[in-house]
Amino acid sequence: MKRKGRVDEALSTQSRYCYPGTTILINNFDIKTQEELDIAERRITTLMLATLQLKNTPKINTLLTTKYYLNIHKEVFGPIYSFAGETRNENISKGNTPFCRPEYIYSYLTDTIASFKGKIPTISTKDDFTTWLADFYGELNIIHPFREGNGRIAREYLRECVECINNLLGFDYELNFSNITEQDSKQFMHASIVSALTANNQELKVFSDNRLQEKQEVNTNSIKKGR
Image 1 (cartoon, helix red, strand yellow):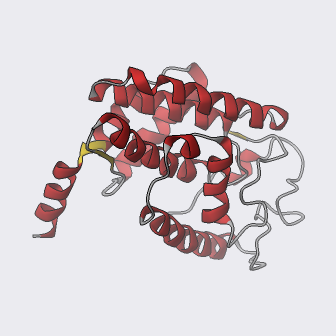
Image 2: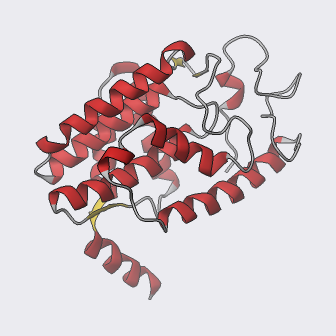
Image 3: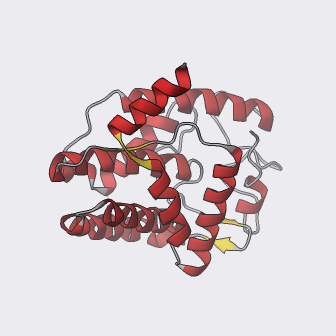
């Protein structure tokens, strides 16, 4: 599916991340058509995300750091973009939603990760867990630390957070993004916009509740779908 947000993301002038006179991101393959870049990016990031999911989840003091968050972006997008793993240095927006100004990204991201690390001991039920996930995603979304790939990195990061919290608190959940329908995607996009504009994360919480499943449930559903 083609993404349509890049023109909206440039607030005013030509993006320093794009080829002159275009909204096509400068890339390691020197691809200069959007459709071709979308295909290459999708293939590469899908492979890199799958590779990450085969690795052991790091311990909490490694995972819940800004350094680790930036490193995920570098691993996933490094093969295609030279700016992978770096916070963006220009203003961006989508629609009517402006994201965090670049000079505040690093400190805001660091404070946010530390804050949600501190809230982990308050998680004792699935409802607590989905609230934590929704609120955390809402903050990561409004920070939007990267020029490209923010949603994918936030979702992978929260997937790893779930695995880490399982180990800490004895849960057996999985943040399952498989079998996402077009309607699910639209609902998630709407929930993200509402969160960014109003700081109301209730719709994100509903989405998180549907995606946070017990591993046994996930495996059973997969077997049924395979028949």
